[in-house]
Amino acid sequence: ELLERGKKGGGENAILRHTQRNKKLFVRERLRLLLDDADFLELSPLAGLDMPYGDVPAAGCLTGIGKICGVWCVFIASDATVKGGTIYPIGVKKQLRAQEIAMENRLLSVHLVDSGGAFLPLQSELFPDKLHGGRIFYNEAIMSAMGIPQVAVVCGSCVAGGAYVPTMAEESVIIDKIGTLFLAGPPLVKAATGEDVSPEDLGGARLHSQVSGCSDHFAPSEEEAYECIRNVVSTLNCEPVPEEDRDHDSPLYSPEELLGLAPLDYGRTLPVKLILSRLVDGSRFQEFKATYGTTLVTGFGHVEGHLVGIVANNGELAHDAALKGSHFVQLCGQRGIPILFLQNTAPQPAGPASISQAEAHSNRLKAQASMMAAVACAAVPKITIVIGGCFGSDSYVMCGRSFSPNFLFLWPNARVALVDSQHFPALPPAGDWTGEELELKQLKAKLEEESSAFYSSSRLWDDGIILPQDTRKV
Image (cartoon, rainbow, N blue to C red; front, top):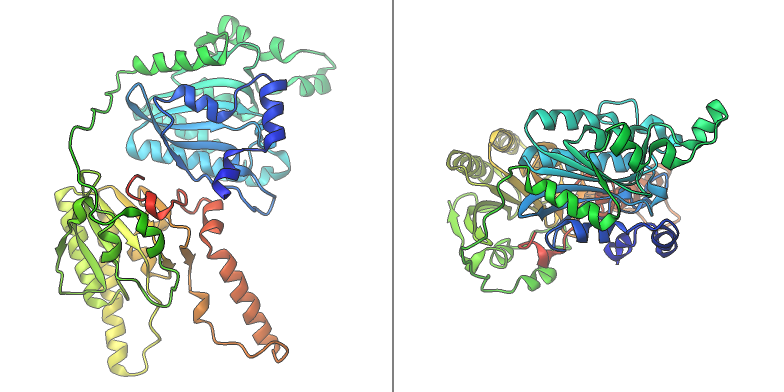
């Protein structure tokens, strides 16, 4: 339901105004014309929901990965039906994440710009810091130096800082009558000089394609603009992805059953092999150290024909399990095999009550530190999927967000927090609470809210929530 709501952008009225009064295509229709097919991986579709400054559906822009002329690309497409295309702090963060993915994977970057610029009341969260709006232009320069192509279509307003996006791209297209490009729009010109000027005269398509040279191509219509940009991509000398000719087996057990296997009780863990048998090709899994450190499952399998190393929580990440994980991650790094982490961290054990328990606790800590170092230094692609709980330091060991996996996705049931609120002391019946107990109740409720997968995804702490049965496809 939330995903469907996000697909409607700013709502039906805003879409009607955008398409009928402004004579522009809705952003998803633009992507349909741009990409080879409608099947693309959309990133962080729930970003921007229930933010402190209100709902910003999909953070005001669509980002994702698709193909143009057989070439994989990252796209960043403004949705002007959301807040008139105004850029909010969460929108900046989403665009920076898309650029990060493009740089990590050396993918062509395509911008569809239709934006009114920054939302000024929140300028302190948009402008001054290192990872604020200006970082988008810095990244464009760095990507150009890395030889990563960037192209842009000006398909609406392109105002203030946003005007640098198409001008810093290798090639850009501007659309007649609807595409405009300027640092300050007509209202600011009027306020500063008293002069009345139309958007077309100030920064329209003909001006920038015939006079200023800011745009490289002039398009009479949106359809022709996306055809033009596809032609541009075909001349970038990027190698198209070869057609997949390898056959792969489906799992012996239906991936649809994953929906019923998603862990809901975070006080205990589900045998993770039940999930693996519905993820890997042919349900074939070559386990590594099967009888040692059994609370972590490691081994090799194929997903959609691609060989991956799998590291999956199967209980408490104890000393032996962490040592096994460290060994296996180093093997994958040595062999150049991508790693898939399935994260469902178990509740943290209670503090040591004796000298022997303290020694075991210290040994566990040391083994986990070894695995952390192995995960951080493994120079292979890493994808993390949180299938259940994501609590405490175990989440770092299992390649959580701070360990920079190439992608991190959540199942809808996932919980992400420093501690599990269920471990808080039990409270007496209502009415008998002391001040400390009331404070504890409020903290527990806050943790419950903030550990939700939807709270996480709306703030871009991950790359999106995916349905369990779609995991193989993603």
